[in-house]
Length: 260
Image (tube, rainbow, N blue to C red):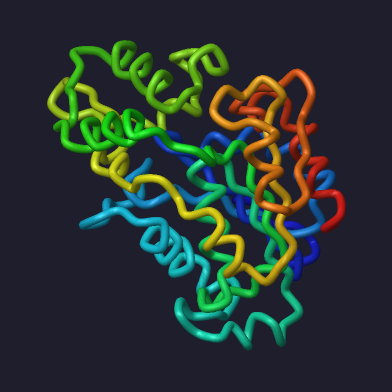
């Protein structure tokens, strides 16, 4: 998190499944110069340092984020968000993958947050029965313990989809690991995989703010045609993959230019 000179501009960055808010830390130098206000990159529930939920839903994940933002926006979760509106604060939400779905849930009319716009990056729009069954299987597995940090780090990079983008010893990886009695595990609660497939048409219908959906050109998890079917603006980022925000932060940050 960092603060800018204009406290009325707030950017909320939400990470994808398996990652943590630290995945946005490489953005800090860019945001310092290009975002005219404060920005926040929290850990979603069951990730990083955020405690787990008894059960995972997109609404539940959004509620946890909203609760953390209450002191910032003045809008209580489930409330009308009038105080945040009166203060003139503008909340723009950029979410990657799972975080993009949570961003849409935060923008719902009844969420009570003063959200002004949502950018969803790399949201998986279509899920097969086999993919949902695999996610349920992963959700039912206990946490795996490793004898070394390096082993755990390499598993974290695979689970979060960040392999090849960060080295195992990169500081960003630290937030995704936990050590206990000389052993290491991922910080993520495996049960989070059970969140399932989002009802994107319903989420988009419930959001009364501008929504932009984006994807990397080489993202295998979602296609241009799938996103175009939702009838909202779509941007394809040339040469990038699923983790476009890590591969080319400047290109993804440029998606926010209309809200500066």
